[in-house]
Image 1 (cartoon, rainbow, N blue to C red):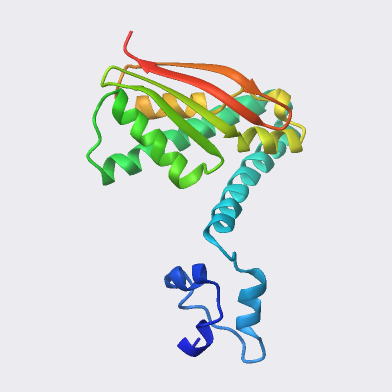
Image 2: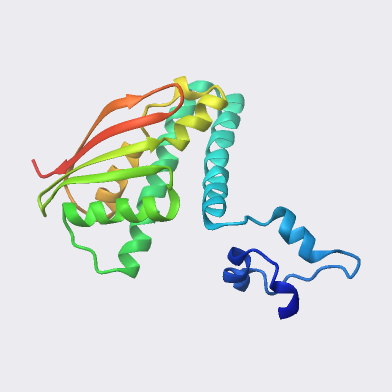
Length: 200
């Protein structure tokens, strides 16, 4: 696609063109109009779309588990999946960054996960020391939201972020205790979690 055609395209498309530079359209297609119609028009919509896909995959996978193996297996698979995701997230960030092997390091990986994959969460750090952190996580719990939409929420232990944090701790080879107090998790998946990570 020539540079003269890109002038009317969404800025987010131009910025992410490295992912699209090898796409080849049929000469009979109006490629510019297709992009204008279907490509996210800003970074907020792009991030939200990716988050929705992630949660939809989680919800659909667990729904199929329930149909094939019974609803009593849903929570086990949910925990195993979130745990594996937490360890993989920790491995990736540990390989890319010099992260402290303590509660502060665990917290940095949690924040990185919010930045890159959980945009619906907001956090507030209340205490931040090597031996103890206290934080608030609030917003929309996307995993709970899709589970409610698919009618499987009653088969899952909430919140799944608890398992995710424990997985980060384990991947780092640490022995911190995770205390997560659910202050709010309503039918609209609005959540308010108190999180304390500390050495006992």
